[in-house]
Image (cartoon, rainbow, N blue to C red; front, side, top):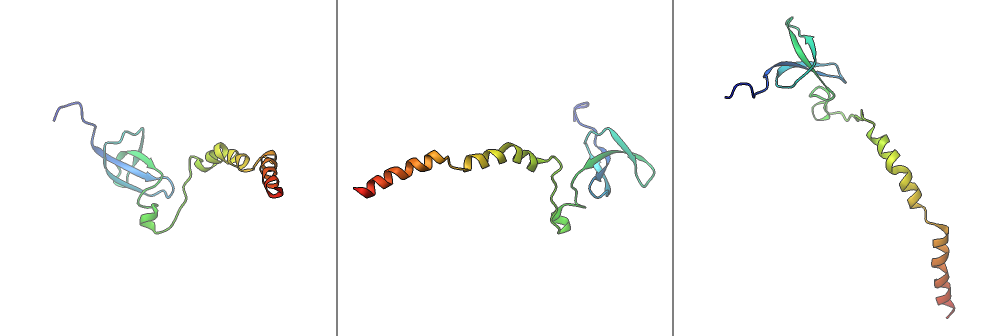
Length: 106
C-alpha cells in the first residue's frame, strides 16, 4: 500500500439522534466531535438520523422522517400551481359549448 493516500481506519462511535442509542465500530468517517465510550476511552463521534435501532426494517414499525421539510417545500413549489392550473377558464367552457349548440340546430 502507498503511504499517505489511505484514510485513517479507526474506532468510531455512531449515535442515533432519534433514539439516543450508540454503537462502536471501525470506520474512516471524518468527524469533529468526540465522546467517551463505556470503556473510558475517547472516540470520534458520528451522529446519524437512522440506524438499526430505529430503521423500520429492523423495528417492524413505520416511522415518517422529514427533517428537511421536503413535503412543505414541495407544496410551496407545486401545490399552488397545480390548484390554479386545474381550474378551467370560464371563457374556454363557453366557447366549446357554442359550436355544439350550432351543430344541433342544423
